[in-house]
Image (cartoon, rainbow, N blue to C red; front, side):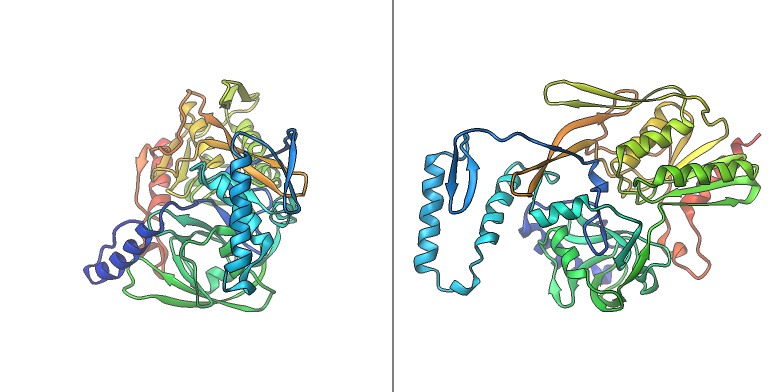
Length: 428
């Protein structure tokens, strides 16, 4: 989070950041605050497969696991001894939940990898990941990420006409508490669990907002949230505007319908808005790039063994009008993949702020009990061979969003205005 501009808030934020420093490493994922964690793990380009089990099974309690270099006899003996001591001496016996203890062990193994994107999923969480979405959810209607500076959940995208927007929530808001319960150090799954609930019920979010000297307590009434992933309209001078909020299964057809509509309306230039787009389905973004890019590689991935997998487009109808892509610091993963391809083929310019910087791919491996793990398995590269992981994509035209103007009564989008100015200069 950027340093606060107003002197009166300095001590407020200093206290927050001091607490965050003590919290240590954090997970940063992008998910939707809906009734469940986003079904297709949009921010992480997750692919699903199963991994064959090994040999020499042994038991810890009722859980069958496999012997390995890590889980050896010494580890098993120590775990059994710890379990025995807890059972014999731990005072708060009523707090002991054996399933939670097992889950904590699995969580700990993945946490030791020091990779924020490699995590363990319980059977229930994994089922939620694979649940097919029909585009209607029950929740507040916002994306969230874990802010690395404060270790607090942060809203990175508020849906238009959603309960969150109607309640006055904004992109960049930090969630300090949910119904009075602190969110410091919680995982995104835990935060979603606190926020989700039945339709027409209220949830109170304690918000830290840049420019405010004190906490904001905002009540949001949960509702049914429609989540169209593509929006479009024609701006002045026949400049098409097309926003992609995420790359879902339905996004490709929504994009093609919107793109065709703009072309039929006499579009002379196009702005594609990928701001706060957390990423999503790789096949979807490849399909969209296939509609606008010349023939060639869109992206390729390389795993730890050097195996390379390429994704290419046919280039049958590349875009032939001026193009600008809007991005910000919350544009991540698949949205960066698309931005990098457009930049490398020099078919458009990038406008806004440096992107998030997620250039790695995760794969989900299911386990025999219905649980699973997500592991980082490869890096992806732009057509020119650049890996943008932890670097992001720098804009060709850097523009800060003036939030005061944006949230004023007559909303002014300084980044969009810069993109329009560029397109107007290019239209012949």
